Image (cartoon, rainbow, N blue to C red; front, side, top):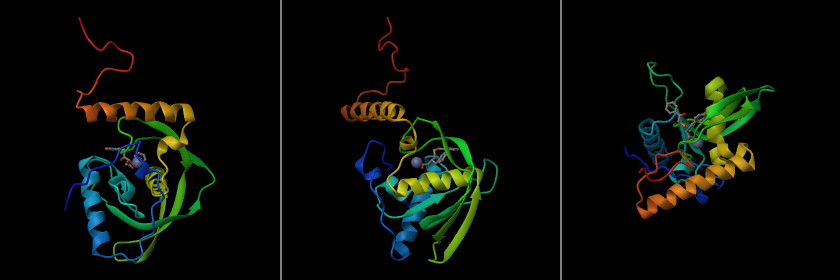
Length: 187
Ligand code: K1U
Ligand code: ZN
């Protein structure tokens, strides 16, 4: 197994629609095993293939709480086939939008059809955090980030900050731990 590098926004690969998987073969199974290892190491509760630069409709997640046994899920070609009428608001984060969190409203419950790692068709009925996480990860497969659910003002503020941090990292600058607007040098 291998740890995969996680792309961060802004990156055009995160905005592309991923392609359906034609056959669930050993390559897809290896990708999902590597994605799970990468997700646990991050740490995160979900990861979609475009976040590791692979344009395939594959995602992994595990929303088990701390102290509970692991419950890894691997989904190929997931499709939302039903959503509840009522919404749930959850404070979301994203490994591709590091250190930014925002409340996003999504359907409270969903049913998702997908292929498992043997290629068999399955249906998961989800509510709560699992429903939120499934919708967040399926959004990734369609090139949508949680910040796309925010106002243009909030989204652009976050993207500008991430771009600034990327450029500073490319230059090899030290990471600025101070909040925006605070003095850069102490006397
Ligand atoms: O980048 C991702 O898609 C993963 C993302 C999933 C997610 C989080 C919250 C709401 C919806 C979807 C994350 O895992 S961000 C990190 C995170 O939430 C977390 C990390 C460690 C422990 C518990 C949560
Ligand atoms: Zn994400």
